[in-house]
Image 1 (cartoon, rainbow, N blue to C red):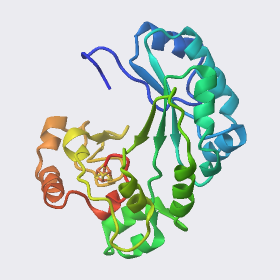
Image 2: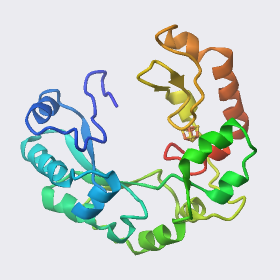
Image 3: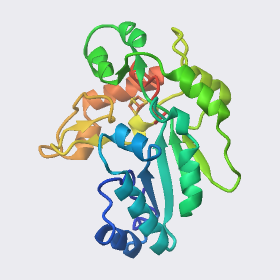
Length: 246
Ligand code: SF4
């Protein structure tokens, strides 16, 4: 996110956050906010990320907070089946380190049943990348109902769901879904390092390549317009079922 065209944000820095060079750069460039992914206590964080990065991440976070001036530093925690019993940990860590807030990200997934209900074809192939063997929703809902958020810490959930929407989000009953429209299709674009352009990070349907033509001509080509028309008519497609952009 750039504010006034000059100040960037750094998101999802974890094992890449280097204490000296990167911390200095963040402070020098007056970055608006930095989001650091912490998935839970050391063993859980390392299991979820399949790294041993926890100590490094927490150390870097501590160093950044000690030196920062106006930069907002938040802990980002995606809710998963692995950390569902430890959802209060990011709040405790944020309090201990003096972070500016915690952002919980609702888990994005499709159940096997939801996948089977999709018509076979490209959409179903794309959706299969996001399938979980079973629905972790009940477990997550129970944990979220128990989570107590202290008033002293700013907390955001992404997406922000009402209590009723949260029940729908984690439900696996056929036909139950949250009723929202995806606006990302109009507001964002996903450009791969190869130059391929996608309508979003989940729809692996290339619509052009910025190494061969301008981004404006890609955004206005017939296939891109078709996608926008589809979303104008339908609001979202089954693949969007639990997407953080809703
Ligand atoms: S809601 Fe759907 S179209 Fe929008 S970003 Fe998510 S997956 Fe992509």
